[in-house]
Image (cartoon, rainbow, N blue to C red):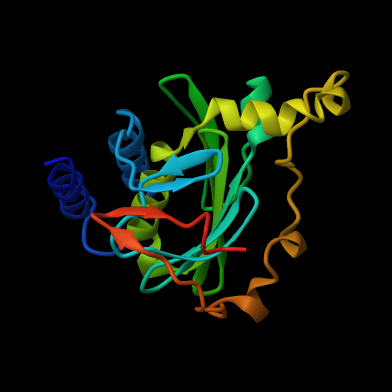
Length: 221
């Protein structure tokens, strides 16, 4: 039933926001619809966190708290900032002059969305719920990609016991400063070098899927 409701919500968003074009107003509609209510769906469990993986998205790579994901059209880079989560650090955000640039604040979870035009593509960054997703997408894929990104970020649930152990062992490093791995400096060269890497990946990870519950801890080194 929950999967059906999520599917109906996505279809409704597609209809309301039009077929392909997206505006700043459309973006607000998508953000509010996808983030206003917490997504309690989970079908993918890892050491320290879990989340809902849409049926058309697969995991290409995992390293610590970083994941590379892919759907039919796009590659997404997911980073979890467990240090900020551990200390409940709130990061600042300054609006840019990009196509879309705004702060996100729903249910006490803060973040931002920043979309920069690059020829016929968009460079999109969404930070929310102590996690961040970056991607380079074709312009006509922005709407669908944003729905996918919001669905992923809003569904992330953290395992406090695992994270307490992970961060607590080195807590002395962070006593003086509430450290965050997410840097707000705008540095396009620091992102993926996407002109060279966009669309390239290694598709060699085997993921077992049993009753739509995915656990990849034992199959990814």
